[in-house]
Image (cartoon, rainbow, N blue to C red; front, side, top):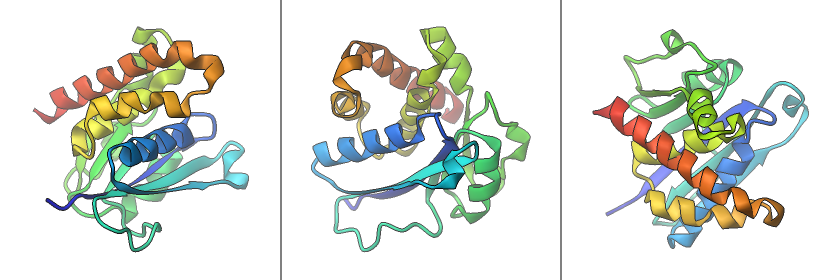
Length: 185
């Protein structure tokens, strides 16, 4: 079975989009897949949108650049405005509905998965885990990897100083996946 999934993950600088992109890339590598990860650094990180691209495939990856993404994880309104028009028809868009109005989704053209990431993260105990909620929802919605593989790879992206937070981050991933599962039923 051929596996190919690409995603652009975007939000405000500080929302952890690079961290979850890195997590997805490590989890793909740990699963024995080919992966590319490209963070976008620049002036847009100062209050504007920060983003990264990840490609996961069981075959060689011809290019790490994504012109028409198959999927998006969108954490803020400017990112939705920038990337939704480029998205492939029928693609999966995980949206942080805590910060972005779902009426802005092009639900006729794409598979929208609105997730109140901030509220779910708050209920777990830390709003800063909204990114983990989003990546959990994404993995559930796309099936690109097993959730267990994603959670196992947390130790590779979380600083040793914060290792004690790995269980809470895993809980946030599970909560995002559970919400996405309900949305998609």
